[in-house]
Length: 322
Image (cartoon, rainbow, N blue to C red; front, side):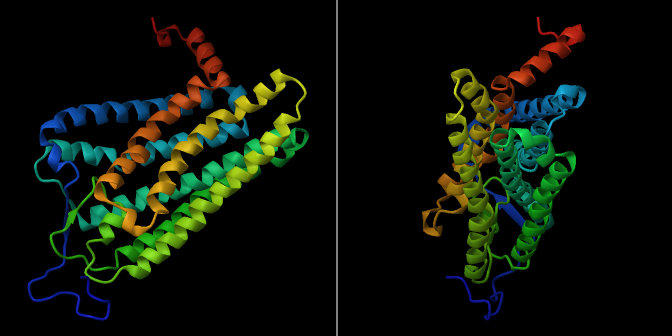
């Protein structure tokens, strides 16, 4: 049983942890080389795919629109997001001692949490962009000017930095002791807080409240936006017009479902529903699989991006895939 915060931090035989040990893949020792190759390929594909999207939008004037401005932000965010977890995980799949310093753990949690919350807000901003484009097409240029787009993107990043910096700083004011074994493959908030020597009930309540506020509210905003969007699309008289309008939203809808599905399952469910196995499986989805799917979703399902890539390869024969 954990000590209350008013009790001594350590007993005679306890000492504060300065390093943590990950035990996520310890039971899969024989499969670790295979997992290393698999995750390395996914990581390279994700970083390469998002870099291609960013460069393609950068060099294609026809894609210099609010929707693709937000897509550049999302692609950059996804590269940083997966890079905050996977490189270290790859190293730990090759070495026997899978440790991380207290400072390293804090740095990883800061980066990961900030990027995660920023993505929640950025997806809501992208939903607003689609809402204005479909429901108020005549006012789109005015309502989604460069200044508005910059403010929405800046607000997303600022919210992520301010909220998560405060929360993670509070987490690392806790004393950690015992074995220092993290039942995970990276420094996520809940597995790390389980190692605290004091009662973390207040931290857990605050984390749940912040999750409700900054995950559920943007999600509800996105749902309300798409309710209005669908209502507007259904009023379009021609089937071709409805398909064209919906196609501009389909990629964003898929990304939202992937991201929010795993986020809500992880951070909103009750504490007693968390198990190391389910937490690790869900974490693999939102740290590795989802970022890898985003470049596919925004290329295979996006006609404008595919046409821009085709024009670029026509101008540059070296880029053609024979």
